Length: 394
Ligand code: AMP
Image (cartoon, rainbow, N blue to C red; front, side, top):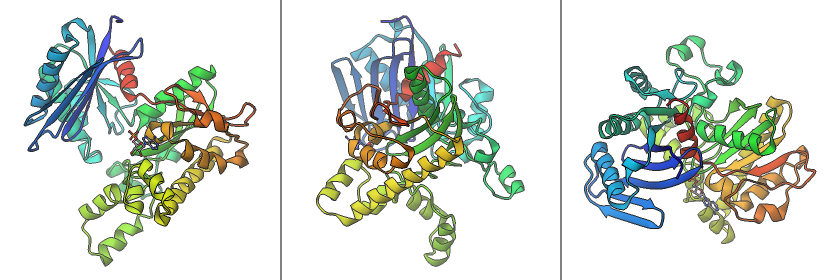
């Protein structure tokens, strides 16, 4: 065991995901999930090496959830007192204009996360519950906030600002904040380290249930597909991605839908789920195999959107060295990768079909030797990235 570990906490409105990791060795020591907090039947699962413990009980709030986590560490291991924990790292989705990097959580930082709740209404209030509970349980440890938006805080104005009335946009702080930044930063950093180059023009495709693309030049993000919220951009599991905002006016006027109903429709009932009935890409492929035409059309829309973003970012960067796939779909769905790369022949991208088909947890190249643009698969590890960022402040 290395001598330092970080407890990474990702707190949602009714769940706490946690991992105890060693930033220096890249090892995950233990991990767990406390879920259905505040609901009728709560559940927790803790994994330490080969040992797994699950329990079912009512979990009133995040503080009780955090106590259960502590109890599971005590019962199953490892013994937290001997793990040399140097910090608790908290994943925070919305850092707004304030945070271009990780921040030690003091009263001022805490207040800023509170102030940012209107810009991250689905996430920041839940993160605050996790922070408050964790500070109660671990009062002597430094707590560090790591923001999903931080990597995109430095986007050039032309990419960050919408062509929305300047006064209104500034008053209500409407701009492109992006999301998944911790993953885009981690993955683009891994690519640069593997290739030993810090001048690369990269496109990172984070394709999971949520999906986003970023354009990264020499380690700095120059554009990204998610916007004011994680709704904009690529087609996702349940989200529309790009859609004409006039669809909102139309649904409000013609269907008499409320803003909350439209929010739910765009964020939860659309994307692959709304097009096919399934948000999981594996089920979508099964539907395609059984001749489901809507599923085939959904896949075409998904790939078409990706082709547009790759083309746009190639143009924005005036060149392209590497395209990297990451997250659940990006790392595992060889058929999807092949479909996209097949459409990118105009860039001089050549897929190595054998390398693409090989399953692996390792970072790897899946383009042919001599391909004008390299294509890679790099597993994302947001917990490790959060832990490493947290370490920089303690
Ligand atoms: P994430 O949000 O990164 O955890 O990704 C979750 C998504 O990855 C799931 O909803 C699936 O659509 C997708 N996924 C996971 N494994 C596979 C696989 N073997 N093939 C295709 N898609 C997968």
